[in-house]
Length: 197
Image 1 (cartoon, helix red, strand yellow):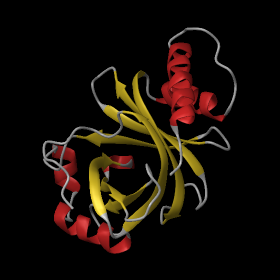
Image 2 (tube, one colour; image 1 turned 30 degrees about the vertical axis):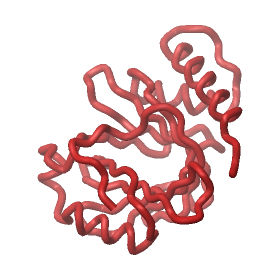
Image 3 (spheres, helix red, strand yellow; image 1 turned 60 degrees about the horizontal axis):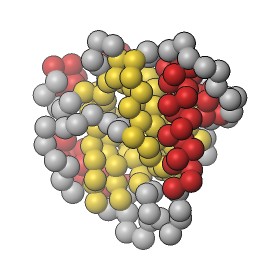
Image 4 (cartoon, helix red, strand yellow; image 1 turned 120 degrees about the horizontal axis):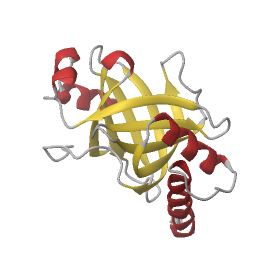
């Protein structure tokens, strides 16, 4: 079992300092996390809710970071109430992706674009990575393209590690798989229904 407590305390401290800096506060020590936190909050200003450290396992998106890339996914509640996932590449501090997270499949823009049901998308995700789905996020990619993101806990996985399998809600293809290394704070948007496995 890996002990993440020291890393989590450091990340929480840095996230608070980076958020204060982005809002005109004190200087932030330089490093991959601090640079990414500043970039994320400059991209979508608002309240920083949490961050996930992930590694790309596979992707079918042409402009996405390559397999093996280490990313930080910041969850930010915008001043207008919208919730965003802003992803930053740890190596370059460049923003790799910005997605809007919506509450559920009934959200008008998600529902209008989705051709694949949530149940079908769940089956697709579990076929790729068998396990227990512990969370689902409903995301709007570029141009409001809907996708499901399933967090899957696999038997025998290290404590705190989950697979994040993204299924395109229009085509049913697995568009990306990421391995979550650590999570601090709240990420994703609260759903109206609990996750099913």
